Image (cartoon, rainbow, N blue to C red; front, side):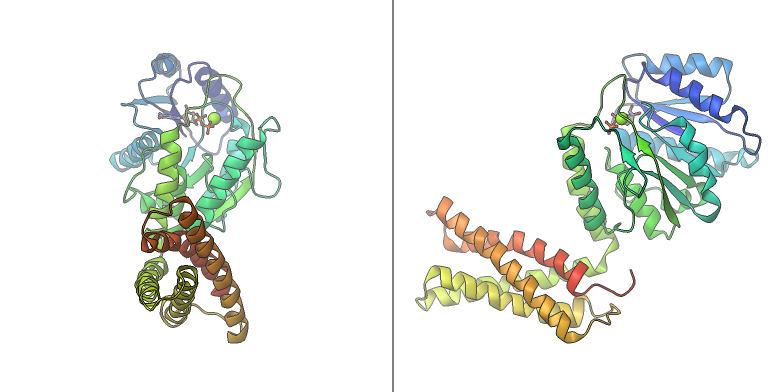
Length: 369
Ligand SMILES: Nc1nc2c(ncn2[C@@H]2O[C@H](COP(=O)(O)OP(=O)(O)O)[C@@H](O)[C@H]2O)c(=O)[nH]1
Ligand SMILES: [Mg+2]
C-alpha cells in the first residue's frame, strides 16, 4: 500500500492501525504500507517511525514537498525499484489511498478481490452504487463532477466514471508499463495522468463502488496550483493519446487561415462587418467538414448513414456558428476600439472547442471505442 501524507499527524496512526488490523487475518497474502511523507511540519513522520519500530510492515519514505503527484511518483518508483532489487520480496499489487479516512480501510480487500480479472480496480464514487459524503456542499459536488467530466472527455477516459479517484488497486506489471509518466505532473492531476497512462498501455480497468467520506480531522491540501495544473495537464494528455486531435488541430488551423482570409476579403469588398464575420465563419466550417470527414476521422468505423452524419454536422456547425459569432459580437461591443480582425480571431477559440467535442463524440462517433 502507498499512502501519501502531508500534515496528517491527526490521522496517520489510526489509519495505519486500521490497515494493519484489516490485514491481520489475511492468510492469502503478505502486506506492507509505505507512507510517503513530504517532511510534514506537524510530525507525521515521527508517528510513522514509532509504528515502524514495532511493526515491520510499516515503512516510511520522506522527501521535499512538491505536491501529491511528485509524492506518488516517488512512492511508486520506490516500490518498482525495490521489487527489481529483491525478487524474493516481489510485490504483485500496489494499492494507493488517502490517509485521511476518506477511503475506508475496510474497502481495500474488496478492491483487491476484483483484481484477478483486471489490472486496475478503482474505488469509484461515480459508478452506480458509489457515493460521496452527504455533507458535501453543492459547490464541492459541482467542482468534483465538472473536473471529472472535463478529465473524462478531454483526456479521452470517458469509459471510466470516476477518473480523478485516488483509491486504486493496481497490478505491478501494469504499473511498470505505465510508469514513469512522460511529463509527470506535480499535483492532484497525477491521478488522471496515471489512469490515462494505464489506459493507453492497455490495462484492463474496472470500477467498484465506494463511499467517499469527508475527513473529520486535518484539512485538505488541494490548492489553486493543483486546479490550474489540472486543467492544463488534461489537454496534454489529450495530445499524447490522440493522433486525431492533432489532425483536428491542423484542420482547425487551416480553417483559421480560411476564416480570416475570407473576412479580410469581404471587408475590403465593402461588406458590413457583422455579415462578413458570419460568412467567413460559415466558409471555414464547410472547409473543416470536408477535411475532417475525409482526413481527420477517415479511419473511424462509422456505420451511421452519411445523410445522418451530414445532418448532425450541420447542427454542430450551427452551434459553432452561434458560439463563435456571439463571441465576436460580445468582443466588438466590449472593446470597439480593437481591430475587427482580432475579435474575429479570438472568436474562433470557443467555437473550435465546441466543434471538436461535438464532432468527435457525436457526428463522427465510432461504432466501438
Ligand atoms: N506526500 C504528500 N501527500 C499529500 C500532498 N498533498 C496531499 N497529500 C495527501 O494526499 C491525500 C489526499 O489529500 P487531501 O488533502 O485529503 O485531498 P482531498 O481529499 O481532495 O481534499 C492525503 O492523505 C494527503 O495528506 C503532498 O503534497 N505530498
Ligand atoms: Mg481528503
